[in-house]
Image (cartoon, rainbow, N blue to C red; front, side, top):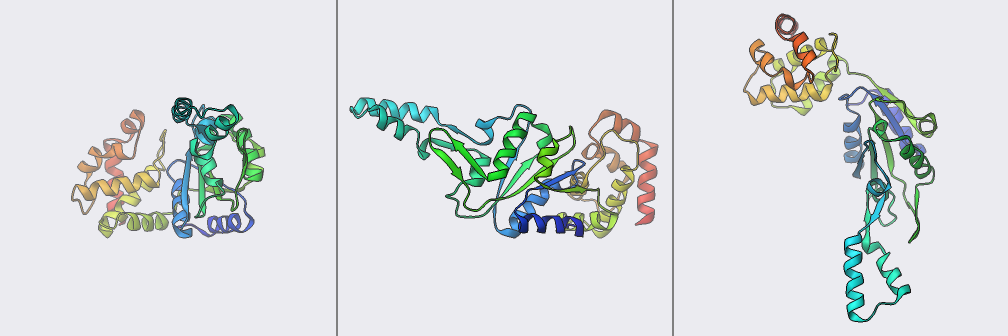
Length: 280
């Protein structure tokens, strides 16, 4: 359920063949956008989850050394081991383990792809530099095989939670979109779509409650995904309306730090529940 600004950015990313760089707080739907786009385009969603220390062998490709060694022993035992032939056979596509980036630009793909590079801010700056080259040409050079180039470049969506600043050189190659927390009406529509088993009253009350929680002084503000989780949990508990006791018992679904739980539990959350029930 994208607003017009996000929809236009996505349209331009598709039309211009440019990556789309999404920033926003955790849980606002950045990753969900990639999944929704892949479904709408009938494309494969290929996800690269970034983390500190991510390298080429986990992001692009590596050789299956165990299978290569086994093949080498088979060739040696059969008396067919010649150095040049063995090198060609061992460094072939059969022994190549394709990681997400290579999967996305594989010229042998039969379906279009959406490449999600999730939480790029968690990767090292060295990996950002490698990504610049790949996104510029949509090709990878494998020394033993040569250059692999995409026949049809994938739609690339990068996300960041701003745990650190991503280099400007990467951002300049992308269309940029900041995703805000949704309005009450938009978040309610998302909850109704994702948790159809929830009553109208429960969906409205829970959405208002989470919106009120976001205005509190919290270390980690709950996102839309937490709203969905909370409503889903109350439906599982067979609740059709807000209940202060159940809210207190399930508060850990939306608040993820001890400090936030202690600051909200008790009178504060009871007042917010009463306000949400009165407004619904």
